[in-house]
Picture 1 (spheres, each protein chain N blue to C red):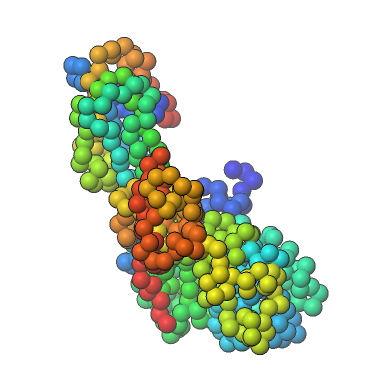
Picture 2: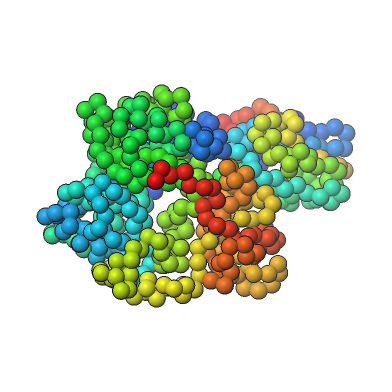
Length: 119
Length: 374
């Protein structure tokens, strides 16, 4: 598992990267009330804002962590945004990217570094 | 955060695990571990306790209540003189252009007038009252009292168990009560759309009273986050957002707060700052109006979102001034200003959200039925 400074977690299986937000991010956001996900089949570039997430407090974005193609999105969190608070690092993943160049993954934090990062 | 003021309940908030944020110069609880959504719903179903000690409490004294009321009417377009003893009323300070300088609650306390104003405006309000009313009237800021709101359908039973007699009060009644030797000034009013009370308590007795109320199984502490979503669903204005110095009362749909006696033809018509500009808006002449808004779908529309008449093109016809997710409505709710032509209930307009025009319907306020004990 890798982590971004935007508080995303990235889980790699073959050429597929599953992306969600960390428990720390979910806690900071507060009750999530709205999620807008990218379209399946779309090509995204690293740092594109591809998810909108709104909590009772504020709106924020999730960035594409890598270049790739969106191959699956988690409609369950669109129907029930509170899942993001209930199980952010499990059931409430956001989208899966098919990635050809995994090299940017090396720049992301491992769990120990992320824990330091959030203090 | 070192320059921030604290209320007499700051230690209580911290011991309850509140997330503290700066608000109007004070360190205030924005939420407790329960979270904004559950705090909101708890207040609507049981009772919530809010620390609103940052608000300004001011006593105005003169020769008699009538003398104070007559003088105070120079600052507000409200009927202050005919307010019965022990009754509270909503009011507005206006400026020379008819704009709203602050909104407030005022009470006839028999021999004096008791005023509660917004935290962010209190210095300016005290200066305004002092400049306009002294020396005839004394303006005394009350700085040694906390203010606690207890709101929700279970508020009456919870408070009655500690302060017998409050159950007999009606909406907008105000009275003094003794609680373990501390004099409480209690009003049956609030800022949530629910039945409830606001309790002015000597600072030394505040934490004890708050803890005693929180010991009641139906009472939970509620932060500013839920206070905002509760008042938004209740259709109540937040000063500095839904109303400000450039907003006139009729535009803000607050004409109901200007009693007949202060209107043209009334016994004491005018005589407050900006009367001419305020009266020019009467009879539907205001160019824009504050309305309730229900965005389609689930995405909240927040303050600053531009409103349009059509799904594409054209200039904005208005703007959202407060908006978010309404936990009781279970969807996005907002308030904002639209040009008068678009202010009728059920008018369909559009809000621009991240470059896309999303349908929005003009809706009646409040979004949830008020549960006042009239």
